[in-house]
Amino acid sequence: MRSIPDVTLNDGQTMPQLGFGCWSLSQEETTPAILSAFKLGYRLIDGAFIYGNEAQMGEALRASGLNRDEVFLTTKVWNADHGSAKTRASVERSLKTIGVDQLNLVLIHWPAPMKDLYVETWQTLIDLKKEGLIRSIGVSNFNADHLERIIDETGEVPVLNQIEINPGLQQNALRAACAAKGVVVQAWTPLGKGRSFDAAPIRDAAERSGKSPAQVILRWHMQLGNATIPRSANPARQADNLNIFDFELTADEMAAIATLDEGFRTGPDPSVFGAD
Ligand SMILES: NC(=O)c1ccc[n+]([C@@H]2O[C@H](COP(=O)([O-])OP(=O)(O)OC[C@H]3O[C@@H](n4cnc5c(N)ncnc54)[C@H](OP(=O)(O)O)[C@@H]3O)[C@@H](O)[C@H]2O)c1
Image 1 (tube, rainbow, N blue to C red):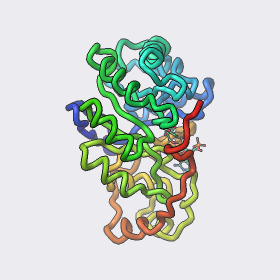
Image 2: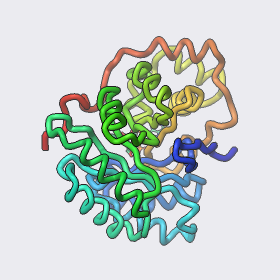
Image 3: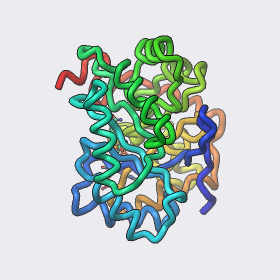
């Protein structure tokens, strides 16, 4: 198995292009799932306060025997914690719960535009980075207008925007807007809940390359230049999801997968989500 490539963020830090997502893993599943991911070679763990398993992220890190500087830890500030004081408290709580002195990356989980506090929340992350509690700061589920506003009002460009992308929701306009600003795009729900596993372009590329539909989709993300964070509680699937660096999709296969975009979100719409 070849190693996971790094991407360089606009603040000079590096991050593995492929990491391990922790959403919806129960507290009981989380530590063993991350430990097996570490054994297989994953080094980026994507968590969030709202996932309820930050303590298990820390537990897995300590049990793994890996040094802190070998692992890239991401967490997120939830919608209820927007605003200066709450954001600061949220980051301090995450540090304590995970049991580390510094987080590699903290994201605003959703812009929650109806609260109109995401600029203040962003400014607080800028301050916490200056204080050394966070190494890199970014956003999640930001549309182009949200991105533009935080950049215009603070002058600080996020390193990354974590957004839903899968073959059924390719987000080409938002991906281009992020690229134009030097913001890495990291795909959540990269497998799209399996909705396109049986689609001909995926099935044909899987047959041709001797890979599974999930591997074809993750390879598609890599070739588009997306970072991504697939989740599996199953060690065999964790291994499959990493085993995508020894083959390439052809230009024709990439073009055929591009036709699967139907603009269908499996998750919420960022322009209206996040009132609570
Ligand atoms: N920022 C946000 O708002 C946001 C929102 C959603 C998710 N995320 C992040 O993105 C991560 C990934 O998204 P996700 O967890 O929704 O979905 P995902 O990684 O696209 O898919 C996970 C599902 O696919 C199955 N699966 C995994 N590998 C597979 C394979 N090789 N073959 C067949 N099935 C496979 C898993 O089942 P098994 O466990 O049974 O293998 C699980 O049911 C999350 O864990 C979280 O860290 C962020």
